[in-house]
Image 1 (spheres, rainbow, N blue to C red):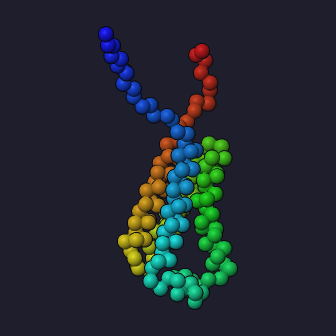
Image 2 (tube, one colour):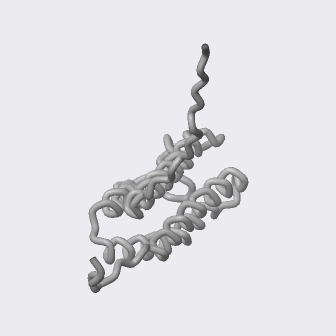
Image 3 (cartoon, rainbow, N blue to C red):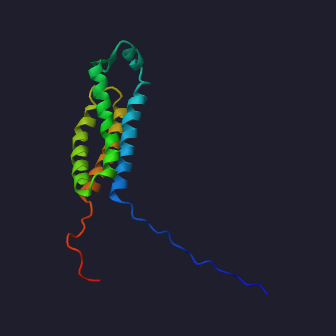
Length: 151
């Protein structure tokens, strides 16, 4: 005598991911793209020669340039931390403001017109992540200020 056992099919259940974690992940992705676009840009013919001569694009490599470059890379890095550490109201506002300000800053990287497909793709991908950040922060769920009387 044989018995067959049938395993009941199971469905996967989506777990709710906190908004803070979604934002931190999006900022980590943005930061990776932002830095990677610059690193891969070093493969552009003439880039290394320009750096060796002390110039990046049209900018002289000075301490001020290095401070500015570090500060611009620090923004998404700090947003990873702030997205997990700030209270909800400040977190939402900070994400909305910073992501909005970064859109024109990222568009500036298209200036110069060289390698438009490469930098255009980088900008498009960064824009998708910034849009996700803006949407996530804008639609941040509200909790009721008054606890429910129903028990």
